[in-house]
Amino acid sequence: MNVAAIKHAIETAEMLVARGEIQAALATYHRAASAGSSHAALRLGQCLLHFSSQDAQRREGLRWVSAAAEHGDPNACHEMAALSLGGVLLPSDSATVARHLLYGAQTLGSTADRAVSAILLDAADQRWHAEGAIGLGRCAKAGDVLAVALLAGLDSGESNGESNGARKAIDVDTLAILLEAAKTAAAGDLRSQTPQVKTKDALLSAFACAYLRAAARPHLRPSHVIDPTRGEAMAAALRTSSDCTFDPIQEDVFLRLMQSRMCAQAAVSPACAEHLVVLRYLPGEEYRPHRDYLSAAALSANRPEAGQRMRTICVYLNEVDAGGETEFSLLNLRIEPRIGRAVVFDNLDQQGGPDANSLHAGLPVIAGEKWLATLWLRQHRYRYC
Image 1: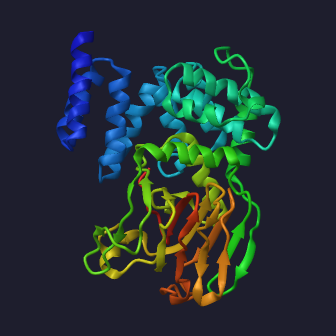
Image 2: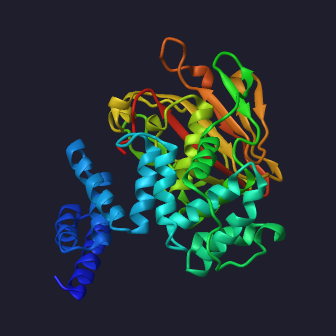
């Protein structure tokens, strides 16, 4: 295949994916990848990883992505870093993640470059923040829409600087240390013993909260609930927010890194987490009293081998002007939203059965808006990659 034929094949495959014709897309990507296109190899690998039901096919997908990364494709390097963070198909090793990211970030303005920049801006050591802002500037200049949104939210001290310069020296060991720090969490404050409810202030940085809001905003849609008898998603007055659910094929390294931190706070492996959900509540919107554990019908329709939702972690992503508290009415407990504050609570009792006392609500927002990140955590592995 010549260059024009490869380009046409990739465009055709993208249209097939959009229509849900995955098998036809796989065959088309395979032809272009076999002709030497690293981008087609990446997309073939991603489709095998995220749309296949068999471990053997996902392993094949990993081989295609790895081959594209070895060929120097920066987006494939980023994908390898994300897979390493997942800890399912690859060991979760910070040095490996750092190596993939820095290799991909050699292409300035790439997704890997944005990921490294975000990690620097999230670092507790503020000496890295200016360099992270400069990296976001490079990405914004290259047309990265998310970087543009994030850059606009930085204060003047962080955003000033030459945006098209080369990255200052940061080696694998240094980046690995920052990654390890980003995945850790300190002990929270116990608010209830049975069921256990804990809070942890400033679990996510203000920058991380802004990142999750900006990444979710273009994909918001009306929230749904799960019908307890049919196990299907449906609209209901019970829940009036908007939300974005990140499929793993949409996730970038920084989103995965923040989920790793949330899972560390909840003391559950990231492999057991359902997909990340980011929600927005406008004035008057709420989530009426409910419980997070799944009905038998809902569980049978959604990875029953992963077990029940044993635990939930939510993180408030902004300061709410008024309202929007999380209330556990049976525990006489009400938690006020604060940017970066996490709420972790058990949905099951000590015998592993549904705990009715986990009843909770997102109270109506009175003024402003409320943003919230949520992970439902299963008893066993939920994620494929």
